Image (cartoon, rainbow, N blue to C red; front, side, top):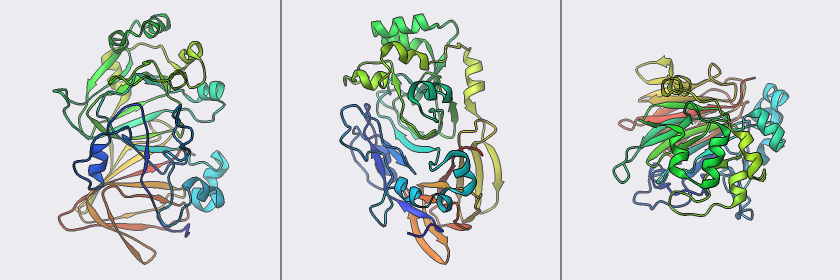
Length: 362
């Protein structure tokens, strides 16, 4: 496989405790598909989903090359310098340091938290935590409710109160401890490790995160009645230690929006395309997410390290090294560090939206 050209990957779906995914099927051109327990599509993933009871499904969530039965993880391990870039390998080793997902929630996700880097190292012996960011792509009204999220503790919340709500399994009280926001397409939110949160039903979003699946859940039954195994709640830590993953700083609603709702930065705009930075090093060193809206053509310039590319909508062509490849919504590519500049050309009357993601800042 040529490590000097964009590499098309297969779609990697992951089982979760919540349902959804029909809108992801729609991105791929499959209309009328039902919601299932595969509500997430993982992008440029070198990570396997952690699902208690499904350990036999060792490849769930892992990306594979379309042209040969090789995982992206193994492909990178075979040639890390060309694929990731020498400076990235020197800083982070043979790991991308990033994971991207499309999430389509037909029900509210369980209330959860992820460790920050310090907590991940101490509790899971991992160099990565799970700071993440969400960019809202769309959504749907379900049972009269518009898409929403929960994010961050309100003022006055203590660990003792939070643990009390957990052991009583008082779900309304758990939800009341957090801020609730209605969300709209185009909004971007940054959720650092330690911040409690829950994606609400109806949300369709792209998530970029550190490359782990450490998810601490404080609901022992999902909103639609699925029992959640103890290990899926505490991730092997035990119920007492899992509360060490939360940051118990309570803040006002206004402060929560100031901290977590990110204003995009316009990088370039021409008659052929617009280019925005949604999340970058000014917000977190963990990752960068950019959005391109292309009506004609756009050249993507290499940055000296790898990146990922996800086509959200539209149709067109990817032109690289004299080769032209047809692309459409749902296609994803790993772009090796050694890949030269390439061009995305939208078909007439089929404008394209795509996302470009990068790993941690060097």
